Length: 382
Image (tube, rainbow, N blue to C red; front, side, top):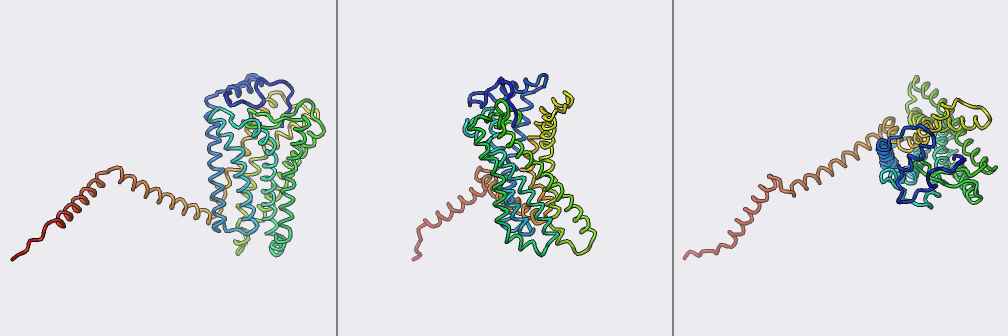
């Protein structure tokens, strides 16, 4: 969410007949001498969002299939949370990454005003849900190791309560967003820096707008602190367990959770740093002009897009840390290649290769010979 101080030289929401990258140049012209090569940017963004769409959808569907077939051999709590993370990543891929890929590939915004409003209002809720799931994943694994006898009873007693609290907290920004739009404090606009729709503050920020920004900042900082703290604790425990014998069962899944937490930190720490610098400047402290210019142009562009790494790279974490998941993927790839090989062989024979022609001629000759022999009249010998 940014502040709109001047009238921008581009529309709030592009129409289907307007080229996105023509408006993209106008956006970057606001920042002065910022070199923009449209062809290179369009190629890079198209490749980036295509990979994000493919990995975000196919990778997480593969994770759900693996959990369904018991190919991820972890404890029940961790496996359940992995399923929730995969569903959340698929939702983010369908609602955010895929529409952005179509936008940069076609150089048009086809989704209209309604979807732009929907995208801006649900952005924080989707990100908050992902952050809370990673927090629950790291904390549940830590509790499973520290209190192995109580973890199962806690799951049966408090699982529904924890799920309700997570849904409540992740859904809290949504009604506040609706109130801010209805009162005219913010309006959804197409942000050419993130190439998607976000909220833009109208005029002087109101109290409700500050509360909304404070909730977002508190959730981001709080989740990051919890994930970093539990990850450090898990790392210490994993190191100690690796030094002892007979603790392989307790260590199972710890490396996976640590890798997911590290991936989360890589994804969200840059945007957290941008928020922190922005809040420091609001308190009156001033950074050098060159630093501000870089941070709020290329720095923020990098920060808002590296978040997608949290939705697309989990499948590689599971491939690297879970042997049963690697075996499952290997079986699926083998089955896929076998089916593809059969269809290719049949199609090649149907086209008319020399071997297929020889087989067909031999078959026709045999059938013709047998047919002629069957039609020869029998000669009676008297």
